[in-house]
Image (cartoon, rainbow, N blue to C red; front, side):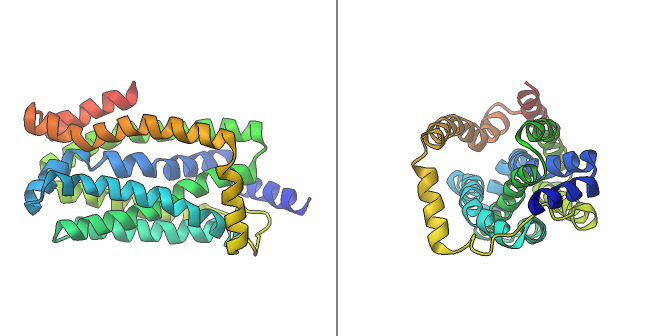
Length: 269
């Protein structure tokens, strides 16, 4: 009852429209971080005199850090709350994005993208947790669907914007746009987001609790099924994301803006 009452009070503190906006921005972190810089990938490679493998590592390192970090962010947010984790994560995201824009070597850029991926995990993980905190399953599904619609809009706009920025001002402008997005999201969270977790769990980060929870999840057939499906489908998507800009821009001769519009058509479809 106390947890339910706290969740109800937070729902009234944050209007449904505000919750959907926050969800859209947090869930949209993933497509904006991966798609917006894709048109600039060949220019990054040439600017640093790097190999294609090194350039593509800026994406794979980001995604590996993103996936692994959620294993830590989840228990931590159960212990200290969603708001502190979100603020820490978005500060790290914004600073790392700025570091990427100012990177002087490919190694520094890859490191910055790793930090950015880990920070992105805090936002995406907390977005799903917030829905669970505030809503019953049926209502939560409706709210999440609206948040995912916002994600779709962000996904459609990211690549064209990245292409325009890369054509006009170079690849660093595309990376700087990520810092602006992170700063705007951080500002909204600091200004309007109220803690959604009704009751903290002080033992959430205890190693025995974490290992027991992971063991239960790893043995669950539904988790295994969806993990295999996700891995198989994302394997194809990752191959396209990591290679398409080189093919369309360097081989087929499309401009960065045209490539961005092509990516937009795929997100729209």
